[in-house]
Each structure stands twice: as C-alpha cells, then as structure tokens.
Image (cartoon, rainbow, N blue to C red; front, top):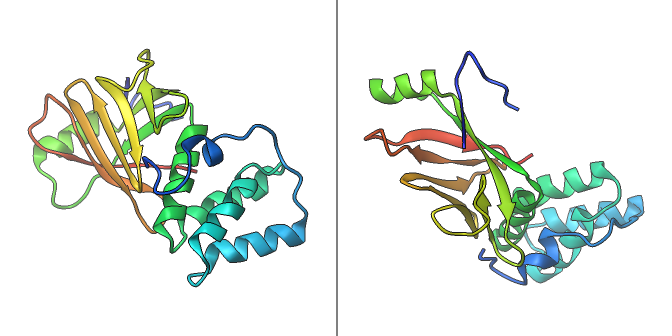
Length: 196
C-alpha cells in the first residue's frame, strides 16, 4: 500500500451468473464490425432485454480489438439496468486493473479528524495480484485472498488490508463509492474508486 499526500501526489460476484474467467479475461482480441457493435450496445442498454442475451454480447465487446469499443462496452455494462450485467462488467473492469487507487472525498458533514486525514492522505493505492479463477486479488506483495486482499462480489468491492477496511458499491455513474476505515482512525473516510 502506498499513501499519497497532497505534496507528494503522483496519482497516477462472486458473479451473479457464469464463470469468473469467461468475461473477466480475454484469450484473444476480437474483430467486431461496427454494425454488430451498435446492435450489441443497444441490447446492453435495453431495460427489456433478456439478461442472458446481454451477458452473451458483453463478453465479445469487452474483448474487442478496438480499445474504443471496449471502453463503450465497459461504460454500457456498468450503467446497465441489469445487476447481473453490472456485476460481470465490474469484475472484468477490476480484473484488467493492475493498480487500484482509493481516492478520499471531502464531504460537508465529516469530522475534523476525517478532514485532517484527507488533507494529509488524499489517496491510497494498491498493486493488485489477481488470483486465477477467483473474484479477488491479493494486495501489494500478497498473492492470496487472505489478510491483504480485495474481494469483488456482485456490485460490491471490499478491501481488507490488515486492520484497514474499505467497502464500496457501484453507483449510477459507474464509479465505486463508499468508505475506507483506516485502523488508526475511529471514523470512516468517504472514498471512491474510479473504474475507467
């Protein structure tokens, strides 16, 4: 874990359906024509579409050769009216990350202790070590889902870093929002994790 302060900032579900490896990882990049991309994205965005059909088209879009198509698929999947599609997309988004940055958010009703913590430490970043066929990743030098890890389940992401804890939920904007609870602070710190 790396703490980032204002002076030295260099900021850089378990699935609801299917297997974690099916959509989260791509064996190869796929060439998909523009008309098919349009049709697949329309299906992903439709509140009346069958969830299994949506999940079927999500995988190829997330594995598209063109990065712009992959980005459109991630945005559509995270904003999908289907919680199953959101969960599949969230896992895929987390699996493609090598580093996870938890940014602290200064809200009006926070205590002076939390405000001081945010001023001193505006973000925390972790190296992710994804565990094959699992919906979790070890953090920093840890390569297991024990003691120092992030767990992705449904539309939630939970961080355990020794006694530091974090809990985040996917919101309508496609960000993970929630809190981070450092062991040395009695209060929860509002925080977010950007996925894209």
